[in-house]
Amino acid sequence: MSYILGLSAFYHDSAAALLKDGALVAAAQEERFTRKKHDAGFPACAIRSVLEAEGITLADVDHVAFYDKPFLKFERLLETYVATAPKGFASFRVAMPIWLKEKLFLKRLLKTQLCEIDPDFAEDRLLFSEHHISHAASAYYPSPCDEAVVLTVDGVGEWATTTLGIGCGASLEIKKEIHFPHSLGLLYSAFTHYTGFRVNSGEYKVMGLAPYGTPRFKDLILDKVVDLKSDGSFRLDQRYFDYATGLTMTNGAFADLFGEPLREPDKDPLTQFHMDVAASVQAVTEEAMLRLCRAAAEEYQIPNLCMAGGVALNCVANGKILRDGAFQNIWVQPAAGDAGGAVGAAYAAWHQELDQPRAPEGGDRMHGSYLGPLHETDEIAAMLDDLGAVYERMSQDDMITEAASALADGLAVGWFQGRMEFGPRALGGRSILGDPRSETMQKTLNLKVKYRESFRPFAPSVLREDVSDWFDLESDSPYMLIVADVGKRHWREMTDDEQALFGIDKLNVARSSIPAITHVDYSARVQTVHQDTNPLYHRLISEFKKRTGCPVVVNTSFNVRGEPIVGSPEDAFRCFMGTELDVLAIGNLILRKPAQDPSLKEDYTQKYELD
Image 1 (cartoon, rainbow, N blue to C red):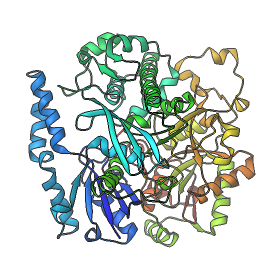
Image 2: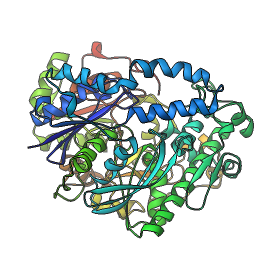
Image 3: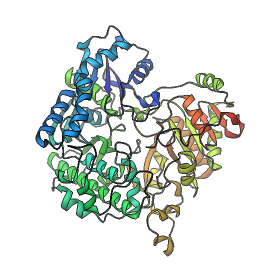
Image 4: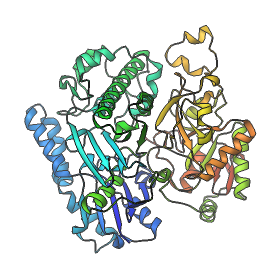
């Protein structure tokens, strides 16, 4: 029996992942335990969680693999500062003390932290992978593909920002790279910053805002900011950016180019201008990704594409890549950001450092991404008793019946079942659910449950066997990483007045028979629910379909704005009591809001720092 523990930490989204004889058996993000969103600290809680899932200790682990090589990243920082001196001195002065105190001597820091879990931990058990090798390994090795083009696109690792590789059997080789400061991820983050959202957190808001605008700045970006070649390679004009040498993403020249100043977050209103800017950077990103994929498909003649890196979470671009047809099959790592680097580091150690063959299990080796902790009903009941919760205990069949009835009655349901998902998406393990047929559900969930911007779209979970009847999608999308249009037969014809609306005014127009998940451009971020990977969630949606004829439910993450997805039964109950959720289905227990002690009500509107 051989175990490898993969770790990502110290930048953002710390996580731990565990391989057993080359098979992924557990993975978790630190934020779910510490309740600090995007927690970058050493993932002590996540490590203990994945070890407990297997019933082992750190002493049973053969190797610990880290997802990054800090000396290479330090080299990149020094070379950037030297090349731009004296312009980058302010950034240099801020960064160097942190590097000299902590990050440069990461091996020693990791050993110290691991020794707090196991005092006998030996330094020679530590292995280090390069950042984009970790991303590429996380994309290819857990995928169902035996051969694939592997594309990773993010902000920056050590030097690389974009890599193209080939996976075949147990081998994975990087063929091409684009290096810092030229980065699609940093380009998107620059526009995230410019439109007033938080970098490394708000990029998905820009993607959600884009359909409200028109890409009228696309040509300007391609003419002045991004030199995009026909094969998808690119360079960014650094005159408009400050991330390489300063303390912010953009500079005054960037604002001058687009004609408006930087939007102050949560102060300045979102206007049509910001929506058009969002639409424009989204269009440029899609064009770059499409060119990268077309060129790779033509050069290597391999039908499968695997992707990771933060830009691979851009599910609108992913949907266009799928429909473009350059690749027959697309598989995206569900934890495509840095958290997934823990998975990739472990796989890279197993296959590349230890030269082990690929596990023969076949299929999707992420197992639906249900890789986190599991809480049994007895354990949940004991925790809820300590909190003073009032619940009804019932059989699993009755619990599903009650939850489906609540959904059909238009109630908002907290759903806490099975193993916790790994990655940023709630996939029917730690979810808030609603009726997609409701014209008010999107606004209700955004404003009264999630406490976030009203424009934010919600995703549909649909039975895999019914997906093509409701969406323009024929393939699997288990990780909510493909955007497709709602099927035209479900569209609602709009009036002339409705079609003439602009911007956020489009929000209140029902566009289909499932308006709660239909975005303003008739699209939806689809999750296909598979009986073999999440049988309980599949049964719930099937029961909802029996009652309503609709095999779709609204699915959003079980949290409020700025809060990590709930990790424990206590987290779930507190979020339930701090929001206007109506029902909580947790294990085989059903909690109804009117039955709870009013004194347990919490104010979640200001509990977490806004994201």
